[in-house]
Length: 159
Image (spheres, rainbow, N blue to C red):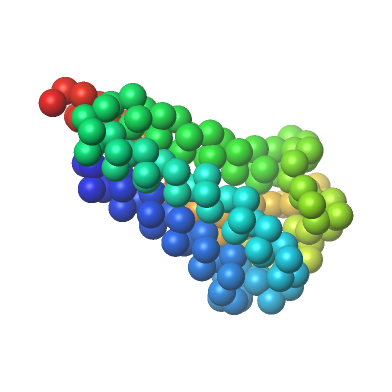
């Protein structure tokens, strides 16, 4: 389970980097994102996304389960942040205050310019931004990584 958890964490990091930097339209819409937005997203999210892998590896190497639980907690917080960012505007019409930090635009403007033309499988709710398939997959990977990290840490603790 440790190998699966570590693989899922690192696969999530790689998936995020590719989806942020590589134009795979219509799956993503990197071509309409400003380079500064791409680099900000990578700079802000990558360290947070890599940290659980480092902590999980350290937990296994040093037989310190608390590091694994910390890794799972960080992964859980990261996926909750992603879910709040994408699903709150869609389901409740509420945008997180940090949604567009440093970009100088609203979430609706950013979504319209960079995500609205991508693959979206969810039905419309009024004029609210909808999570696209790219981010639904990302959040699924993150949730799987968090779950497997807690299971792997429990196995490590059991011995």
